[in-house]
Amino acid sequence: MTALLASGRDADVYALDERRVLRRYRLGGDVTAEAAVMRYVADHGYPVPRVYEATGADLILERLEGPTMLQALADGSLDLRDGGTVLADLLERLHKVRVRAAKDPGTRILHLDLHPENVVMTEGGPVVIDWRNSTEGPPELDVAMSALIVAQVAIEPGHAFAERAEVFLDVLLSCTRDNPLSQLEAAVRRRAADPALTAAEQAHLHEAALLVTTISRAHH
Image 1 (tube, rainbow, N blue to C red):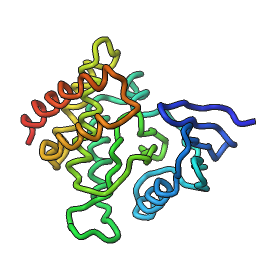
Image 2: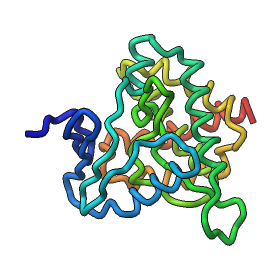
Image 3: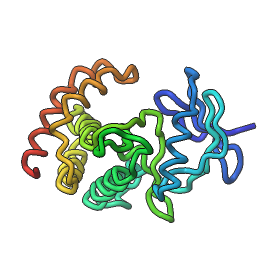
Image 4: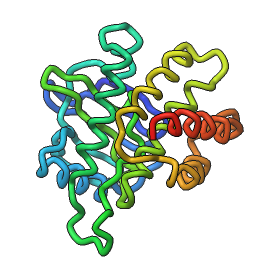
């Protein structure tokens, strides 16, 4: 019998054996596109878990050993500045991967959910997980989405990571070459359309966007 390793907002992860996990979306769906993106960026040297199988709502993936970036930041094993720099580098590396056939040469593959909970700090380096939201578009949208997600934590009342999240956001935006402000409104619309957001998270989206704007203007 498989053991539950993690439970997210829309998916559960089970251990199959020492080298593989099953990621299963609770509400069903088709993981074909997600698996295809992961395989494509992996072929271009980007750090993602190996995809073994993709059927229906199930992905069988390489089992990663190590804490998430958020866990490493929380326990102090990863410095805030180092973490922000790593996330900025992961965004930049992803945006160097060219799309197979794009009319606009500026179009890139976007993760659209790249934040500290979706990075696993393995011995071999950081690995990016959870590619369900991935699409193609301008890199600034990806940066804006990552910044907005971190900013939501920074403004959440009583959140244990709130104060450190603002410092992390400042480092992230100081390290990104792509200015997120041109795509921030689009990121807010996408985030607002996410059914997994709580009512409180929805209510504070524009406050989070204001924080991103303030910090970004200081660096770009």
